[in-house]
Image 1 (tube, each protein chain N blue to C red):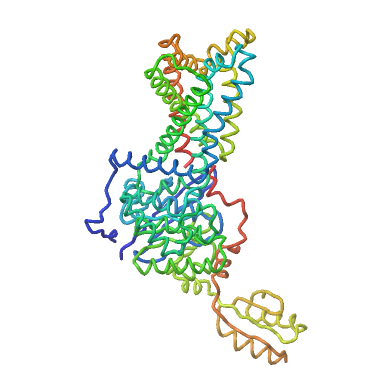
Image 2: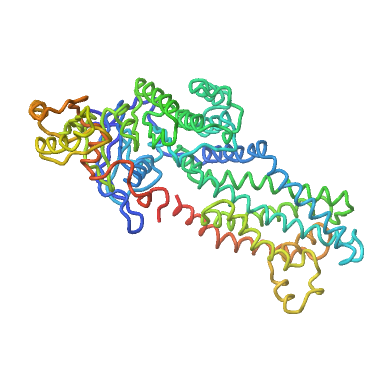
Length: 269
Length: 323
């Protein structure tokens, strides 16, 4: 009994190069971004929500908390960038879970493409969306009176640091995405965890205005750490310490959650 | 003979449940092979193993001569997969979905677009090319699914229940497309719960139940294998039904079924027909219909498995939710 004979021209390649994998990643990232065209709600999520938060906090709480809306904006904008970025990481798990439950993931896995490309493509696309949101927040902040203290270098540094941190944090989202049974549960997880986590940090209210027992937690909350690093880079103040701590937190999160997420994904499919 | 698909002793367990309990398959190149069985029989699991989506716990399989585990990447270059679980992206348009797959398969942008347009044309989807797939009807959706699995011109095509949930017209359209593909030399592995579908399309059928192949052959062989002929008698007067049941039971040696105004009984010996005529004549029962015909696949399935194809308990459907 012989196998099907293939003419040499048709003989399929044994394995894939890294370049091909990167090409697949870019193609799949395109796919995630072109979805926005058909689902404008997603763009609203990425744009309206952060802007609305900035406006509400600046004008409703600003005067009460900091005495003036301008001062409060300077204090709060770096923090709201962190909060928004963490919420936005949920897009990754949501989209992944959607692909898993709808069967898109299986179609992709049956194609001769790099095994890591579907996940990498999604994360790449979500990183582009993150960059858009960060730029939008800085833009709206500037219009409302936020002044950058450390020049272009500070802005670039803040951008890079926040993107690096959200890249690490998105592994948590990937893990949630592979564990839950339907996309909406990723959103629920986001609200249940990210809301309390970000509000019990110093992003909206200075630590010393909170009850003592809460202050201990706020000090160690990674959201506080990242917000401090962004304040240092964008506005001024200590930079090296918070930036280093942020990178350590990011590395720690990635080291713990990336293997769990990848293992979960392999078990799921 | 060349075999596009070969499987030997495939076993796959999900927790305590055995989805595949030792499946052997040999699909000759250029033919349609039907896997026929109820929900949860193991059909989908078998396809997922052959399409490199799932590893078997035991046994091995080749597609196009390549091992589905060791040479998975090569297998993926030969196959196309259409199933309820291998889906297109609902948020993209039909054209974008095909462009995506063409690009992933290494076509240039222009070539991928051209290939997509051609497939949309072939499948009567040109008008809907730029609409999001979520607005498609069920039949359009399935055609796009099938088009998506054909972008790479596969040599082996897996169709997992391609017409489940479709109306008869869409089903016929899809059957025509499959026939065209086979005429072009594509090997098709088709799973279905519909006996008619297997009968219509497949040259060879394997009947699967509880993770095993319980019978295999051409549709005609399968019908013959069960001895399977059915004698149908419809008396003119419904009042004669009881007498007809008694006579038919006596002649055939098994208990007949009564469906509305007709009596049907499975027979293995065509000589019962003249005997039956004689007995009915002696009892002076006028008959509106008297027929002897080969068993349908439905009856084949019933006699092979002890249950009908459609009435498998729903809780045996574990293929899509592995524990």
